Length: 351
Image (cartoon, rainbow, N blue to C red; front, side):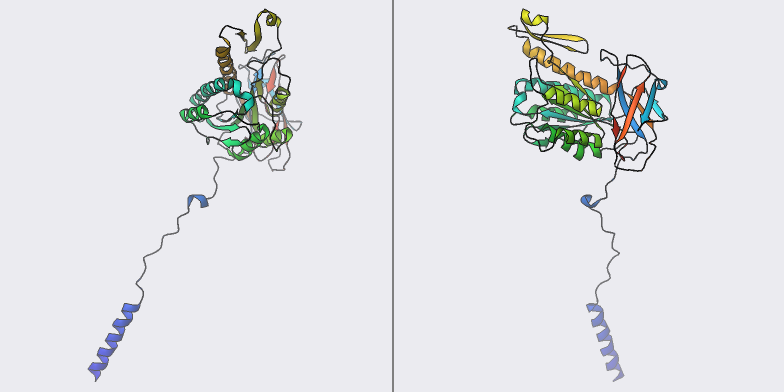
């Protein structure tokens, strides 16, 4: 009897062991998927970093000045300059915005080739420089992300085709808000939008003032290549000049020049870029080659300016973000020189 009870008990224990769940190995913490990761930034800054150009009365770059030649003010208060670099090494973040509307169709091929040269020169100058391509007509399309791949950008530029209206203001807002303002790097960045356009806008939902304000929020300087020719009667160039003046940028005119004395002698126009004259001859076959040459000179002029700028930094008097636009005034103590720089910033984006 005892033997039978012992056997029954052993049977019950064995049956229970078979029905119990097997022990599980220790679980690893769940891996975070890329789209769940917390955002990270290259750097934060409690310094205002200002890149700027100095020009003489003929708009030629002046590159031999010292720190003691400059005084910087924020909201009317003199600031102590913490660092100064005569030729800036601050990396560039450039948005190349190409107008692909019907209004630029005549010179579009030349614009493409000049833009490709510009891309190669900028990206080969500094391994930290980055650029993205955007086209705009009725739509505003990011063609590439930020990249240092000049061949990728060149291939995309060659595939662009003109057609449609012009949403210039919307393109500036989108590029500034969605790309430029999100770029940060230790030591600062110079953010630049380079526009190849006639300055006209007929389809944007944003106004010119809103586009300029968005560029200021992202600390973006607006540089433009005007595609307008002599005799143009629109307000595109006035718009481009306003954008440049408000953001510390520049407008270059490959062709736009009032007719000179040579007009009556068989020339369409004369244009002067950085001291070099180029003449379009009627009936000589020269027009197409001069068009491409002057576009290349115009983009080269901007490229050289961006790479021959000064840079300084100072601590903001009120580093707490307050939502206000803080005015910057940079003064040079040499007569006959002028400074081109952004007029201020919205905190917390000091760079």
